[in-house]
Image (cartoon, rainbow, N blue to C red; front, side, top):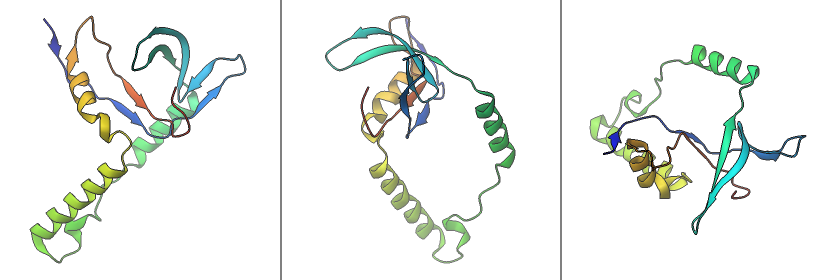
Length: 133
């Protein structure tokens, strides 16, 4: 039997891929440990998340600096509810067209809800525009 959960998946659009001084591949905040398996559609790697004090400090500052938004389509004062809804739908369509993860959103929606010993759990999705690893 599988268990249905709803964990949050973090999306990192501009992940930096590099190599550390020790020759280890680093993707975003993750250090690649080893290759776990390879198939016809891709390769699965084990990675460990690196925590840096500066990153934690920036996260705390961004949490403190978060403010309420007040410049949406409802704030303009013209057009009423239908214009606001239409503007939001157009904005959503434009964001989806520009979103690099748009093609895999269905698979991510399913995978984040399932938890089973034979399924890989998705914690974070990283995208590097320069290369695929």
